[in-house]
Amino acid sequence: MIALRSDLKVVLAAQPVDFRKSVHTLSALVSEALRANPYCGDVFVFRSKRMDRVKLLAWDGSGMVLVTKWLHQVTWPPIRDGVVHLSATQLAMLLDGLEWTRVSPKPVKQPAIVG
Image (cartoon, rainbow, N blue to C red; front, side):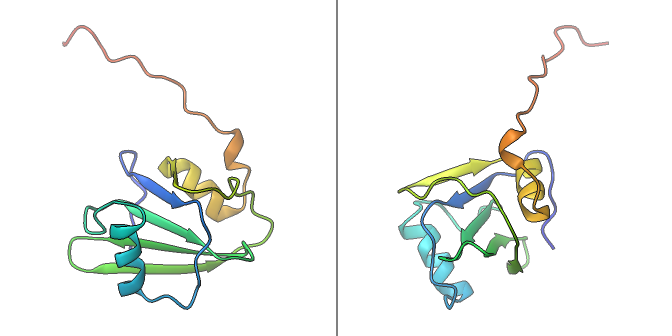
């Protein structure tokens, strides 16, 4: 299971992928195309060419997790080279079909005094 914690890094591949790709092929794609370590604990998100399905790839410490979900009427970032970074909240909203693009986190000031 992928825990959507606040410090979770989510990387969305901007280019659609062939959804016949396996966990091994997607892991290699993370290493080569996204220039990231697939075993770092981040969540890597891939979308289909028709933009109606999504695959999540993540290392949970004991194995690689691959989740596939069919979606309806999802707002995706424009297709371009590179990656898009999302927050855990934005990922949860995207998977729920909500307008994740309208959410921006409020800055929280770090306390200056302890105690």
